[in-house]
Length: 341
Ligand SMILES: Nc1ncnc2c1ncn2[C@@H]1O[C@H](COP(=O)(O)OP(=O)(O)OP(=O)(O)O)[C@@H](O)[C@H]1O
Ligand code: SF4
Ligand SMILES: [Mg+2]
Image 1 (cartoon, protein in one colour):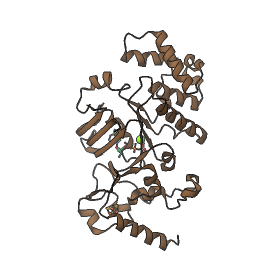
Image 2 (cartoon, protein in one colour; image 1 turned 180 degrees about the vertical axis):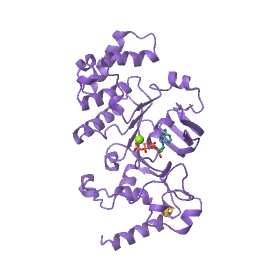
Image 3 (cartoon, helix red, strand yellow; image 1 turned 90 degrees about the vertical axis):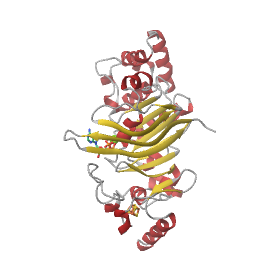
Image 4 (cartoon, protein in one colour; image 1 turned 60 degrees about the horizontal axis):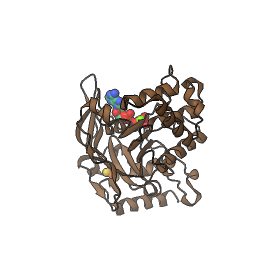
């Protein structure tokens, strides 16, 4: 059986605003990522993807607070660990994060090699500069970055090169889990493909043991990850293989995210995304029952007052809805018929 690199059970975290309001941006989230596997997380803006990424690292600082649940990295429980201890022994080594604003993650006043020396020496006081240079050179070479980049300042690099440098820096300590939070959204399609290729190469080369990739773009995710989790208003609404989530979504929100024009045999380039009317609810005061109810085409009275069941449908696949799989499939077939498809 494969080693589980990351296992999260019922993790709940919240922001406390300056008006002392609680915003539960991660609400009872459970997930698992095995060695050599990748998980994609998709959802609209404000659904809690970045908050989940930050929460998974176990490193909390105001206004974000841990509330409950467990985070296990390679069998080690890091939830509730002292922040200093997390910074010293978990970040970078056990779990690494490429932030959404990755372009700004490098220090503009430092040459890349000096930035790398600081990162490595923060975790290993005894490593020599010569060894750090050699490690960085080999890593950069593996990722197709010329060694000269090490002697440059961030401002001297192109957007794509800066992005690749940030990714290379984030895996210097060979983390067990790498979280890439929309690392490609600011880049053109060619650069996006390059980033994806790089991340795959890192997994294949054993430079990371598992990966979480966050994006708005479900079709992009399909080519990158083994599994996909769809997040809405702080909760997981669907989880399955990438193929299931993209080509056979069960939850009405996932269905809406993918739009209705999916042509598998023609490839994902032909998928046309259609926006879901409305916006996610304010998490300061989320609605009772299903959080998607206000925007759902299939809403029923019970959706808004009963608690919504999480339905397991085999092989680790789940979705959160009052409707059964058969009821949903029937509703989608009726809808397709009505639209003449
Ligand atoms: N510092 C904060 N204080 C209070 N609420 C916050 C804070 N930061 C984020 N939130 C709220 O938490 C929720 C989740 O935000 P988050 O940034 O995690 O979403 P996201 O899915 O990553 O969005 P995007 O796709 O735009 O990056 C949002 O409703 C947001 O308003
Ligand atoms: S619970 Fe009801 S409102 Fe929510 S997604 Fe399912 S059908 Fe739609
Ligand atoms: Mg985000």
